[in-house]
Image (cartoon, rainbow, N blue to C red; front, top):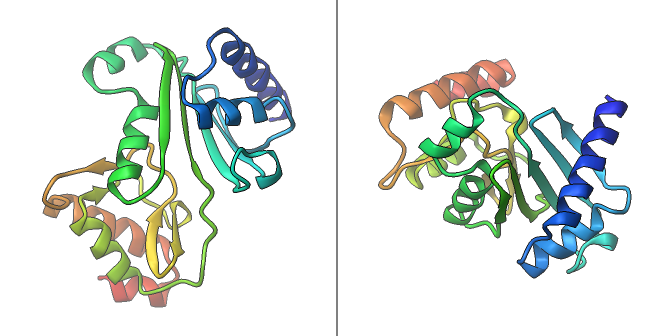
Length: 193
């Protein structure tokens, strides 16, 4: 994995040097990638970093996701739906977050949001119902992709998430509940169903 991290980081730095973000916060965060950011998830298609507070422009830690797809048919996906980074920022803002994004090239996007520090867990049923009422659903839902903060359940990974005006569709709600119930410890999962 270290080779993939190094390869992606070199590639990302080259791309950011050629085309820096226009948004001042994203530009400062892109500059922080020149230091040694903490890689959280790495794949040939996207790389997620945590920028520590001391390297961030506003003294807060940030999550930065660099989307650099290298898949067959990626051009077709870009024609059929908005780029991943822009979708994630839009959904994050709809859910009350401060997400920012720029699509710097057809195959290169940047998404960033302040780091969410998990708090003590609350009632999963109530938290997920609140997210569904606000239009959130995620076919790839897992407890690791959710965090409790300020008494609310917040999604951490919006890569496959969807937003529906007026609330999540009933079938999506059922699928999310089933996925979460199966993944949680037995006592917490039974309360969901």
